[in-house]
Image (cartoon, rainbow, N blue to C red):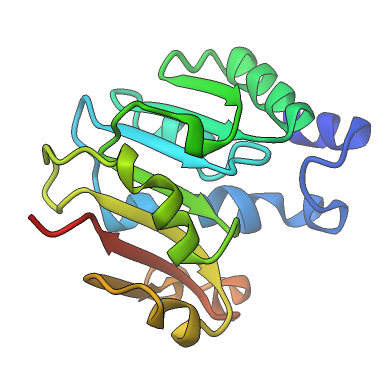
Length: 187
């Protein structure tokens, strides 16, 4: 397994999580695919991708969608680049940079346990395209855990919170794991 090999060299994901890798990382990332079926040509920005989550699992699941994975930690992006190459994922671009420096436009911006939602939105709202091509409006798709009422109270736009127990029965998802969909700016 590619991640296990890399994790022995550098700490890509928590060492205690490597035995439950599929559930806690891969399956968790695919919760987004349960919420939306991205249409061909959709562009996704995955910020703070770390070891490539949720971007790599989604890129495998949606080969006709373009993914741009960014992280400010070079060694993590080196792992992502290697895994993307070994898997032959031609729909993924990975870069070591801060998301605030990007000028491209994306249909959706994803994140998994990076920062509070209000900060992620303020850093990235300029990168959200106003042209919708999917069945739901463009926006932010955050995988979050824990109590979110205070954090999401700071987000003053339309949002949906989906408990991941709606999608999965594994015990990990009963630990207050949620998908948060925040709509892009109202027109």
